[in-house]
Length: 118
Image 1 (cartoon, helix red, strand yellow):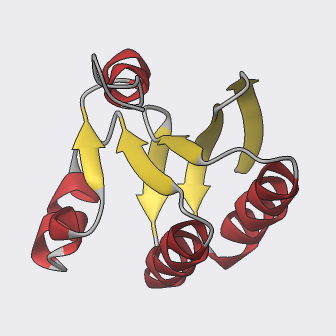
Image 2: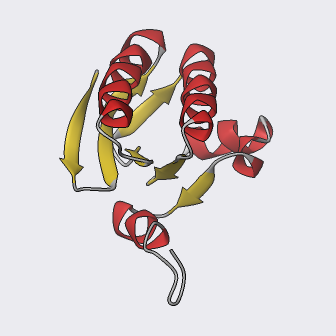
């Protein structure tokens, strides 16, 4: 189980959660995101398409990540959730906090500036 940087551009970083999201792997995500925030990025997509296990510690770390990004004017979006992980997010009512997308491409499109806006 690990997390790793999937891709990044000037505004958005994609982090892949491979296998499980628990306190250890979520800490890896926090470290990568902090570096991204320090570089001015304001969008994070957590790609959960390879995720098998989502622990309560992992959920807690995602919430902390959300709070940190919001303090810096950014957002966290979750893509590719499936199976029990979707049910856990919905039962915990975290789908009201995180925007969920079926895949990374759709999450990335949601970060695009609106026409005529910023």
